[in-house]
Length: 311
Image (cartoon, rainbow, N blue to C red; front, side, top):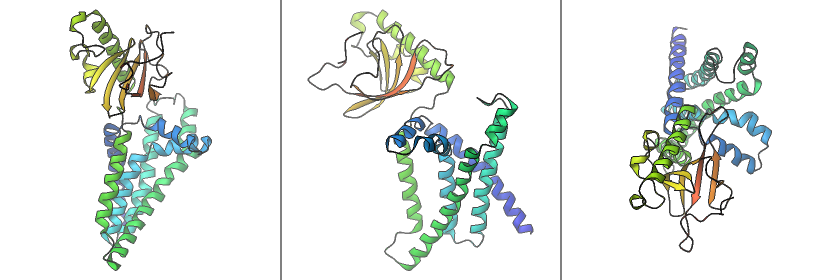
């Protein structure tokens, strides 16, 4: 009984560290901007919209936690420890409890969209949210079983890779894929600051001497701290809007796009834009709109800013 209680306490502490650590590090490194395009992509692939918005949307919010849980339980599985199964189950169950406690603090400490006791109760005891939370238990137990199965198979056949190599390969592939989807994690203050800095950068650019300009590219001295913090490759005046290029390949540039109201050009309406996602949220107070976009590079036969005429 004493050993069981010790394991219960240790697994609870481990689950808390896993939950807050994975969300904090995952949110900081990879951000959350990939959530919306992922949901749209699933719907475009034929997944029912009610399932995506009602269940998958909540599951995507837990991806970072579930990935770390799966890796931890997989490691426990390949360890062959006698206590492995019990600890993996406790860890997975504790994780759902920690999620509920976290939601509880969120509701009663002024969480966004939770403005009343009734709304808090609906949020806390929503069948969809709690049901999706329980998926973590299945993921943890399944990962432990998979680790144990890989260990058994690797001892029977020398042709199979060691279980440890499987863990490393799986983790590396997952992180690389997440890195491709990563975008800047921007809260309301950051969004508003970027839009303000873009307006100021545009004003400085158009007021600078003509001979000092490098075409449409805006000088670093005009960026402002909010834009410079993003470490862009370049910042460009795109028909009186501002394009902050964060990465590029041979075919396209990708980054943040600030639409300034004084511009008569409406971005995202022509074939230059491969991707155009709205980041500005209701309630944002800034002079302009913020988007995340992927902009096709101009072909040699067309001018750099080929676009429809002003409307």
